[in-house]
Length: 224
Image (cartoon, rainbow, N blue to C red):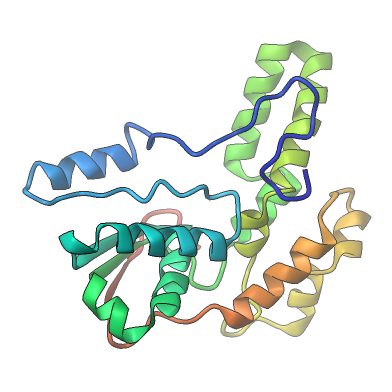
């Protein structure tokens, strides 16, 4: 559905954020837990808006305030969520709740991969499409792929990860092309005009990492 979260197609069950991928986030949890850290996962639903995830992270930090201050390990979009959460908390409360922040592959100025998700050429989408073809066959796979793309293109998070208008060196022409619904329609990609507009505005309001927080950016392979 337009909110990016509710199921739209008959017979489909809602998607929900669950346990971390065993070979991904859970490996990090195990690593730090075995070394004496008290690990608390945020378990955020990454399909929604950054603001909604930031509010959930703030609630999580306040819930376990007695165990703090916490050092935050934020991957990819999680770094943008952390930036928004720190702004929500304000300097005084954030200084009490948050120690250091390590951002792993955080797209501080967005990522071209978000455009690939919308257009269907990003690696994850291609893999899912291949699986759908195998599972449902040629005809069913085509229908399933269309439904998958419609679902992805309803997620606010994908739009909010598009390249930022504040990216150093980016031209206004490029920004206009990225955030113009007509341009996407011209190449046959159905997008949400309202989410495009909201995403462009969200970059203008997203606070940078505050100078009073010790923030380390770690860049992994594949970073653009």
